[in-house]
Image (cartoon, rainbow over all chains, first blue to last red; front, side, top):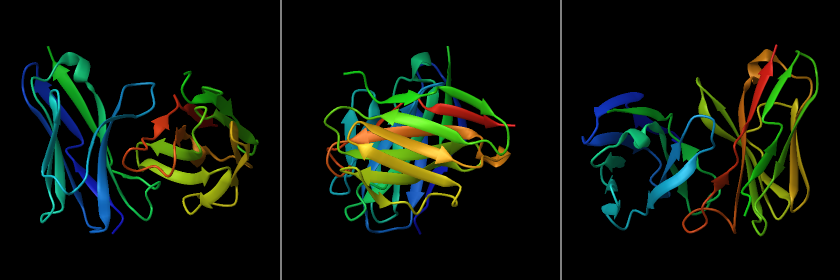
Length: 113
Length: 116
């Protein structure tokens, strides 16, 4: 029940296209859903995060869509650029275990120029 | 700020040897996390500390692993004896407060451990 399932494992998108990564969870107590971006040889870095009281959050070209009833959330990258090529992780935590992030397996995104 | 500092960046050792990984969190952060990243298991939380006290070590794989945080600016993760299956990238992260919304976890660059 603590798992966060992420798909796809890898994704190739043409420059200018839309990249979409999906995550699903089981634990209804989860109430914080961050996305992390990791470049090769670096640690993950927070990209954008959402709470379940909103269905969408947008920051620049990055948007999180959240569907509480389906227990799913997704990351959309608009106008994808080669510099967006990285591994993306979704994660979740609940208020009680706020420090304890449960991560998805990661998606390796490649943007072709 | 220098960010989270980890050392060494790479470690190659032989099975049975003791390995010590080091972490300096961001100044002013009072929560510290140790993660392990592998292709098979992804990113796993091993242990986290709040105000230098271990709060949850349920992710520590077995007794061969131990972690300490003697003060607010230093933590170690020790593996003794090391085994080939411990080969992974180990990340340290820190945050203000109790993590979660508004208390982002900042990750270090990681230590790539190879046990032969």
